[in-house]
Amino acid sequence: SENDWTIGALYGIGPFQISADYRVAARVAASARRERVDRLTLQTAYKLGPGISVGVGGFYATQRDASGVSWDSGGVLSGLKIGF
Image (cartoon, rainbow, N blue to C red; front, top):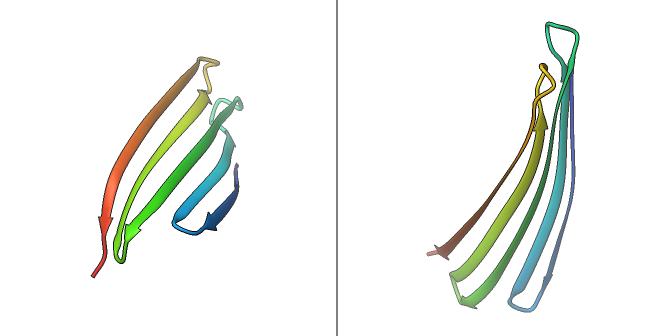
C-alpha cells in the first residue's frame, strides 16, 4: 500500500519566476513497517531575453526506510534554457 501527494505553487512577475513544491510518499513494506520520503524543492528563473532564461533549483529530502534508518539528502542545479 503506497500513498503519494504533492502540493506546489508557481509565481511569476516580469522576468522573474519562483516555484516551490512539497512531496510526501509513504508505503507499508513487506515487513509491515512504514517507509516515508519527504521532499521540498525550490526553483527560480530569470528571463534574460526572448528565448533565453537562467535558473537555479534546489531540494532537501528526508527518508526513513523499513528498518527504521533515517537520512537526509540535498542538491542544487543551475542551468541555461535557450528556446527557438
